[in-house]
Structure formats: structure tokens, C-alpha cells
Amino acid sequence: MAIRTSTAVWKGSSREGSGTLRLGSGVFEGPYDWRSRFEQGPTTNPEELIAAAHAGCFSMALASDLTKAGHVPARIETSAEVLMDGSKTITGVALSTAAQVPGIDEKTFLEIAEGAKKNCPVSKALRALEITLSTKLA
Image (cartoon, rainbow, N blue to C red; front, side):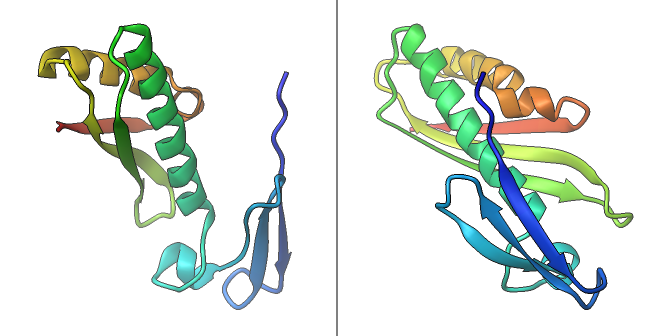
């Protein structure tokens, strides 16, 4: 069983304080604070990291499912928007993917993409949220 870890250090109050997020692999370490999380600021935030994780997971799941179906993708680019309401509650994720997949028709691509959206591990972890998907096949 794979175990992935990350750490967070926070100093001060929630509004005036600041923290550091560090991925267990060490490939990213960066600051975060109230402004970047709930307003507009130059540092990262947990929701941005969730979005990156979901975009990466979905893209890999889509590539795997396309390949299993005999359609090896040339390129997949996915963005994810983690949506929060005014009460600071995550309400959903909007995935948007564009892919170059030689020899596949739009209907087959959409079916495979919907399956990847439903079954990637991050989507499964976030299943309490509404997850939407828009696709573009180049």
C-alpha cells in the first residue's frame, strides 16, 4: 500500500498568521496564508493543491483508460477549479480537459473521459462534491 505524506506548519492567528506547506517528496515547499486562501494573494493554498492533485490524477486515469481502449493519447491537458462558497466550504470541482487522441471519435472520447472522472482516485476521495467535466478533443 502506498502512503503519501505532506506537512503544514502554521504560526499565528488564522487571519494574520502564515504557514508553509511541504510535499513529502520534497519537490514543493511554499508559503500559504489567509489572503491567498480566501481573498487574492501571491502564495498557495490547500484548495489549489487539491486542484493540482485532481487535474493530475484525472489526466493519468484518462490516459490509462484511453490506452486500454486502444487509443494512446498524444497529449492531455487538464485544469481543475476547486469551488468554494461564501461560508468557506468546498462545494465542487470543475475539470476541463483538452486532448489529442489520434483515431478516436468524440462520443467514445467523452464516454472514456466520464469514466476517468468517476474512477480516478482523487475523484473517488471527493465523491461528496459535485464534479463537472468539460472536454475538448483536438
